[in-house]
Length: 480
Length: 69
Ligand SMILES: Cc1ncc(C[n+]2csc(CCOP(=O)(O)OP(=O)(O)O)c2C)c(N)n1
Ligand code: SF4
Ligand SMILES: [Mg+2]
Image 1 (tube, chains in turn cyan, red):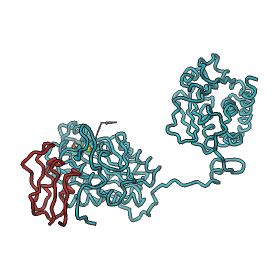
Image 2 (cartoon, chains in turn green, red; image 1 turned 180 degrees about the vertical axis):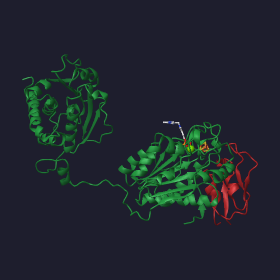
Image 3 (cartoon, rainbow over the protein chains, first blue to last red; image 1 turned 60 degrees about the horizontal axis):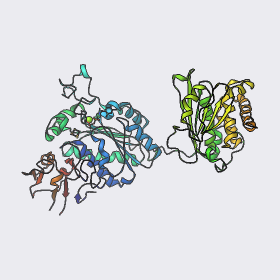
Image 4 (tube, rainbow over the protein chains, first blue to last red; image 1 turned 135 degrees about the vertical axis):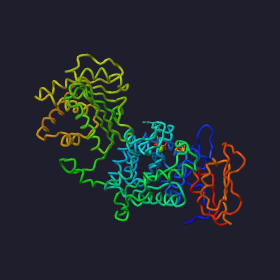
């Protein structure tokens, strides 16, 4: 494996484009900073495993925020301490990717402490490099959770004292008490022996992920000559003499051999078609659906729907119902509720998107269909409706006429109609029927079958069906 | 013969390579580079190709080690 020529690894860009002058080849790190040493070890391992084109480096907040300037891989820069959450999301949706989270001690142990704890406890199949330099380097040398007792920093000017600032936090010791992690080791970027151990640990941690064996984290004791106000060589000596006393190097957990390959990859299981039927409690025979909006009028295609009213009007459920119907047609569909303390008596609303294309954001900023169940909702959301969009409003609760004249308007006494069915609670399904009759978006059998999924008490299904039909009839006769 | 090459303009003169080299084959140059440091300089002989300077050097572009010729 020993190469004849050891030079800048290919996983680095040739030129590090950063302002003000481009085409630099040096890093932004201070002389003697441990970050650069670790970068090289990671880059070398990426080369040797030939994984550059499927690696995602995650840059934290801290001095290593610019990891993406250097690594010719996929890159994500994330909010302070949130790398484990973002890494989890990325890895679970792209299990073939090699996700490397690179974090400092302020990032990982302070603001992101719970993030790393949860990711470790879930045993995410991700590689974490945790740079412990006992300080917040980037912001000018403040105390970190890992700052040593007695260590002077900008915010512990008399030296850290346990009774005042607490003890240095030993992250590896904490994580090693968990069941899920596969491989945990602490290394130090100091002398020949320690450097070679660090290099081996970097490779082993990445290999653990490649093999689908789960969570690995390497804590790297790393010099910050600037923050420590030392020369680079003194800083390295300080790691050996001081830091290692508090943070002993070594392997804290290694169950790599006990873990079967690819058992922690969390590939999404493909659910067989017949299973859907069972999971969604569908009635009738399973059928393949030709999802197609070609017969729907252009203005109603791929609708972005905002449904608003007060809590108790079934606003959120109506949204779920439509989103569910979208899914059943094999379209993309999203639903997000927006409520808060308002749920009790105030206004509630939800955003629904149903689309033949992938949905970028579930937020409906400019609805193409607005359902206003009460006056405050009309006041608030009417201005947002797209020109040419459809407004359906509940005339039982809204006395004023809409003010826009560039939209299509469908007034419906939904609450009154529900009352005629002796249940105010089905006003939402009256509206569902109206939407369906107006837009002809859904296959009616499929739409009605969705009640089985969204209505909790099955004995209310007939009433809901009646309400849908009532809404449909109303629209059929509207304007006649 | 094993030897090293140092990219003068990409060295920040931290001295870690000088410190770690088991045969003291590296020293600081007298001149000051564009970055404003005295960069490391290979003395010209003595290198055994052990690669330690490469691994202790924080700058990706600064040191190349030729282990054989
Ligand atoms: C949400 C948020 N809080 C605080 C900051 C300020 N901040 C920037 S870097 C940093 C600490 C970095 O320390 P560490 O993670 O140890 O990285 P190092 O620079 O030491 O490598 C802080 C607190 C921020 N950018 N964002
Ligand atoms: S402040 Fe410290 S951690 Fe940041 S680049 Fe300088 S030496 Fe490295
Ligand atoms: Mg730090």
